[in-house]
Each structure stands twice: as structure tokens, then as C-alpha cells.
Amino acid sequence: MKVAVFKEGIPDERRVALVPDVVARWVKKGVTIAIEAGAGDRAGFNDDAYRAAGAEVTPDRSHLWQTADLVVAVTPPTHDEIGSMRSGAMIMGFLEPLDCPLRMQTLADRGVTALAMEFVPRSTRAQVADALSSQASAAGYKAVLLAAATLPKYFPMLTTAAGTIPPAKVLILGVGVAGLQAIATARRLGAVVEAFDIRPETRDDVQSLGARFVEMAIEEETSGQNGYAKAVSDNLQARIQATVAERAIGADVVITTAKIPGRRAPIMITAETVDQMKPGSVIVDLAAEQGGNCERSHPGHDIVTDNGVHILAPMHLANTVATHASLQYAKNCSALMDWLIQNGEANLNFDDDILSAVCVTHEGNVRNDRVRGLIATLNESQSSPESMVLVS
Ligand code: NAD
Image 1 (cartoon, protein in one colour):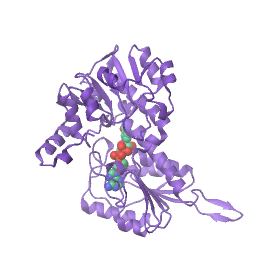
Image 2: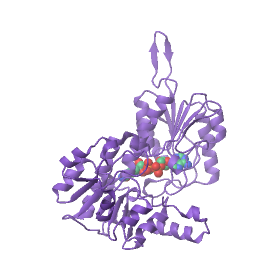
Image 3: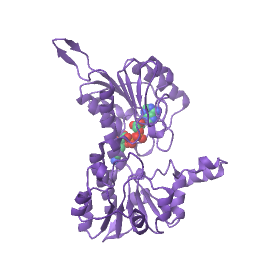
Image 4: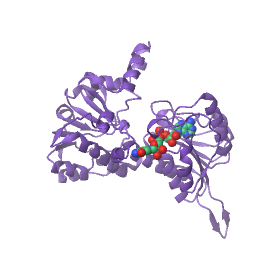
């Protein structure tokens, strides 16, 4: 079996899907690992380290796409890359099945078996393969560092001969994996932190990290499946925005991480709230990839508003902690490969709940009901050809 790892095609993507330690483990098990030359450079893993681990390092990218049995990737393949894969080959990675369902159809049409890291279940057994969590944690950490570097103030309280500096006030919106890591990081830097989430069960986590939970009455069911949140009514979202506005106006830093899988991120901070925030205050919008939690965010860009509020809306922030994000991602993929590969060969056993959940396409079919539904909706809607072309 030949497993291939490529230099990620997305500009500025620094992560690599497998790191040398993980490669060595699979080579020992008799699997051939082929790495595109330079694939790990931007994450701090050079070609010599991969060779020492037993990998074949090759500059021939197109030959590698054509001959791979399993591609392990961080980001999704392009249309052309899918076209060059052989029927029966497999690909594992963040394939964006709910954001770009037509890419899944393209993979199925090509006969490629697609394993989406987004669909690793939130179960104890699957935790070791939970790449969404490992990457979200890196993003939550880095968001706080970006905010601290942008804020023209200290984070900790300082008592000096020149006076006492009060601690920065940080508000975290959305307390999933990224939000919890952001709370922990901001607390370590000495900030006073408060946090809000629509899932009331997050209160204990927030308090155990030494932060204050922002309370509000929530009458709807807000917790969905697998620990994720449900989309809420417009009325509740408007009340959330009002509660958030009260806290954001006094905050130095707001970090937003609120997401609903497969949907546009909810607006937590309205334009009016931004207008009332303090000059010099900082918003880091970690939901930028899903459209953003702040009405004024420009995904992928940093802006300063007329009233002096910095709004950072970075995409793929885990990629700025590329070495450790890659190490963790490689461990996640390797865990999935442990279930997938038996005696050096792929054995896609759908009785295994994890393999069944992650496998979106197989033998020409889209297996996942939700993805199939999205494809049907897209095909039915008379969308313009431009909106239908979701495969870059
Ligand atoms: P996510 O990235 O989908 O969303 C981030 C947070 O945004 C969530 O906590 C969600 O409740 C919140 N949110 C959504 N809409 C909101 C709104 N309108 N207002 C306020 N907050 C809103 O979530 P995630 O980081 O992937 O984690 C979701 C949950 O799953 C967490 O409780 C996490 O601890 C849990 N989890 C469990 C496992 C496991 O059991 N193996 C693994 C990972 C995560």
C-alpha cells in the first residue's frame, strides 16, 4: 500500500499531514510512504527527516497523485488533483463535506473513497483521531496571542512605581474547544476573562478555568448531537446580541468562536456593537472561515474601524502554529489509519462506527445522508453556474 503526502496547495498553508515520527511508525508496519519534496518544510520537517524515517521523497507531484493508494492531506484536493487520482484510491483530510458538497460528488464520480476528518465522531474511542479539536485548540491559543500583540495595553495587572495597571478584560464567545483554550491562554497571561455560550453545560468548564460565565435566560433547546450547538431562533439570537453588546462595550479583547456545523456562523457582534466599543480594543473572529461572528469582519483580513477597533478575522489559524498543529494532526490521521489499515492493506469495515462516520464517498456513491441532501438541494436549485462550481 502506498500512502502519499503532498505539499498543501492552499497558499500560506504551512501544515503537513504526516510528520516524520508518524511516517517511521507506518514504514515499520510495511506501508510505503511517499512524500512530495518540501512538503514539511513550512512546518519545520525537512526532506532529510522524512528520508531518515524511511519515506520515499519525490519531486514528481503528478506521478504521486496518479499512483497513491491513500492520500493523507490537511486541506481538500483541487478538481484537477481529483481527476488525476485513480479509481479505487482513498483520500483522508479536511475535505469540507458540508461546505463544498459538490466536491464530494466529484470524488464519488471519480471512484475515490473520501474520509472526512470533520466527521470523526465525538466519542471517547474516537478522541485520538479528533482533528477538529486538535486544530481548534491551536487556533484558540493563537487567537489570544494575536489579540495580546495587537492590544495597546498589558494583559496582566501590574503594580509598579509608575502606578498600577489594571488587567485586560477579555470576552470569549463560544466555549467549545477553541474557546476553552482561549480562556486558559488569556488567564495564563493574567487577563480577567468572561465567556458566553448558548449551551448552558459549558458554565462549569468556564468557571473551572477561572473565568466568569455570562448568564442569560435561554428557553430553547440549544444542544444538538455530538456536543455541537443547534441553530437558534432569530429572536434568541437578537437577545444574545444584546447581552453580548453589554459585555463587549467594556471589553479590551473579544474572541469569537461560535459555530454551528454546516451553517454560516451566527452573528454575535453587530455593527452597532462595534461602533460602541473602545478605541484600541481588539476582536479576533475565529469563525471567519464560516463567514464570521462579527458583522464587520472581513474574513482573511485585519481591519481598523473608524472608531479605532481592530477586527482580525484570520483563516486557518492553526496553520500559524504549524509544527505542533502538524504533529497533532498527524497523530489524528495515524489513529484513523490504525482502524483503516489491517496487515498493510486498506480494510474499510463499515461495522466500525468511526470508519462508517468518516467515509463520505465509496465505490462511486455519496454515503453520507446530509451531504447527499445538500447535493440534491444544490442540483435542484437553479443556481447560477458560478455558485455551483464549488470545487476550486
Ligand atoms: P464548534 O466549533 O462547533 O462551536 C464552538 C462553540 O460555539 C460551541 O461551544 C457552541 O455551543 C457555540 N455556539 C454556537 N452557536 C452559538 C451562539 N449562537 N451563541 C453562543 N455560542 C454559540 O464546537 P467545538 O469546539 O467543536 O465543540 C463542541 C462541543 O463538543 C464542546 O462541548 C466540546 O467540549 C465537545 N467535544 C467533545 C469531544 C469528545 O467527546 N470526544 C471532542 C471534541 C469536542
